[in-house]
Amino acid sequence: NGKLKGYNTDIYGFERLIENNKVQFNSKRILVLGSGGAAKAICSFLKNQEIMFCLYNRSITHANALRKTINYELAIDVVRSIDNMNFNIIINCLSRDIDPVCILKKIGFNHKKLDYFIDINYNMNYSILNRIDTKFNIDGLDMLIYQAVKSNEIWMGNSILDKIDLEAIRNYLLEIKC
Image 1 (cartoon, rainbow, N blue to C red):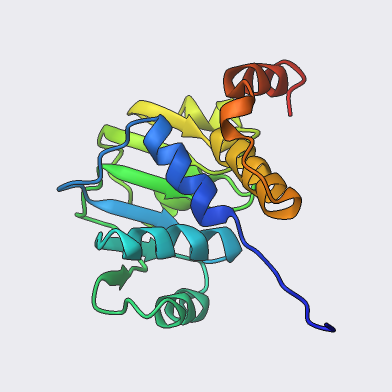
Image 2: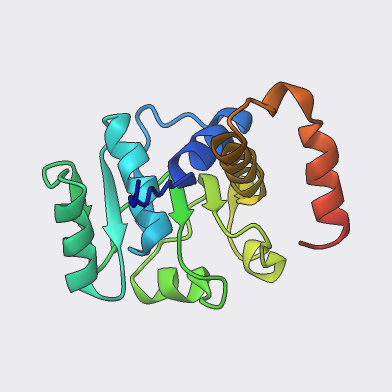
């Protein structure tokens, strides 16, 4: 018919990551790092759940553009500094080559123990994680796996989630250091 159709599975993957890891957002102070495509999906997820959060990006222009794009301006604080702010959850949406600890230090993170540090990068840099005091570190591998499952379901037109061993897939990907 001459029409192109596109799908984005980021929100679905993140939602499943949150469910699998039993992350509780109730009454938590949340900071999202980054304002790229994945951050847009995570911010949209938080908006859909009616969760207020703060957003930091090195470019204030990009951060404000994201806030406007997802039309959740009243519930997102775009921050340049987090001095004297306490967060329970930090969601890192920065690319893997950017050290979130350096960014956090630069903007005044107090290194209070977090409930969760969620890094959507599926090949987590453990030298970074060792420098963040948190109850739970969560990598983006579940998000990646569920995005792949959803993509398969979209393109093949049938559900496969109940037909595959997600733990075996996760273990295999960890084994080959995906």
